[in-house]
Image (tube, rainbow, N blue to C red):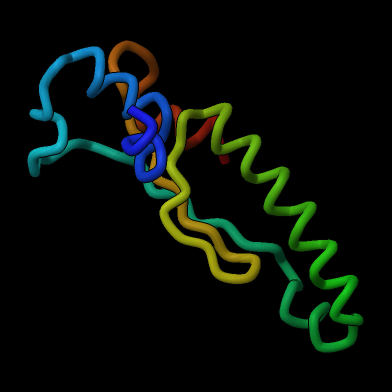
Length: 105
């Protein structure tokens, strides 16, 4: 279980362990929502700001976006500087991935 949690979101790892099968790890198609997000004006800000200010802003931004990702059961797929890609999918009962993505945005 701890090894799964290193590579998968906790809710996905729990689902795999609870099922007693690794079937969910096989390739399959599923409807998802991909959310792309970045900070408006970030590049211009970095050109004139001190490195410490840039890193402080990124630290705060990543903390805030991380809370939103967790709230909506998303998976942080990639990040580079201020840009993030989040995958949202329905896991069991609940909102459709598109609705979850719209709420997360």
